[in-house]
Image 1: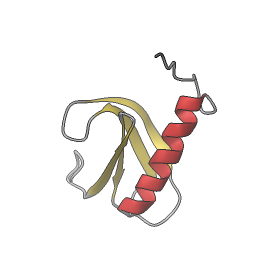
Image 2: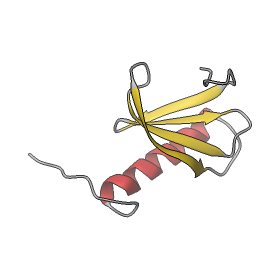
Image 3: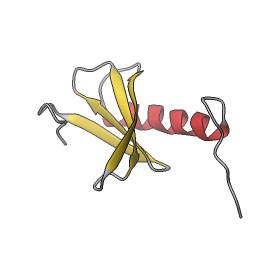
Image 4: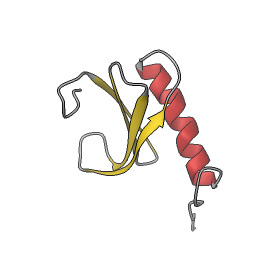
Length: 81
């Protein structure tokens, strides 16, 4: 995919968090939504280590989302039955 500036970018979705990592960037953007649908920007400028690749973004995004939902990175998610 391409970002709004026309740069190549990886996208990864986990638990309705969508992570976008533009080529050459050292930070990702996190939105709420789906890969192909509308997205609501949540956080910008989250530093990501590693070489720009899909697997690196997937590993980072899953770990980041799990920390967010558990409350270690902010307000815990509320899970109801």
